[in-house]
Length: 112
Image 1: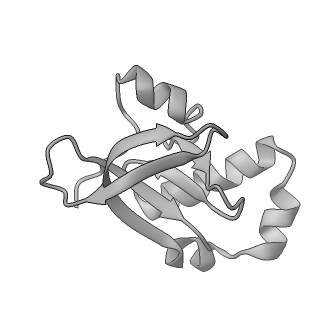
Image 2: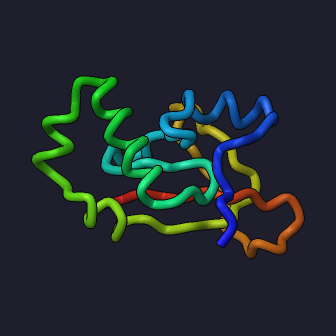
C-alpha cells in the first residue's frame, strides 16, 4: 500500500489540520474521543503523532491510562472522502466515496 501521508501544498488542508507530528496532520473528532489524520500514513506514525499531540496538550497520562497501542491501531479506519471541510465549531465533515471518485482525498479516522 502506498504511503498517502500529509504532504500537501493545498492551503485548505493547512487550515483544516494542525501542524504535522511525525509527518502526520491530526484533527480531533467531534465527539472528543479520537482523531482524524490526513492521508493514509503507516499506523505506527499515526500512533506516534497521537502521543506527541497528547504530550503537547499535557494529556499524555490520560491517553496512556485509557488506550493501548493496539487500541489505537484497531480503531483506525482508512477512508476516501470529498468535500472535506470544517463545520461552524471547527470539526471536520466529509462525504465518503470510492478512491477512484474524482477529487477524493485520503483520511484516516482513529477512534479507539
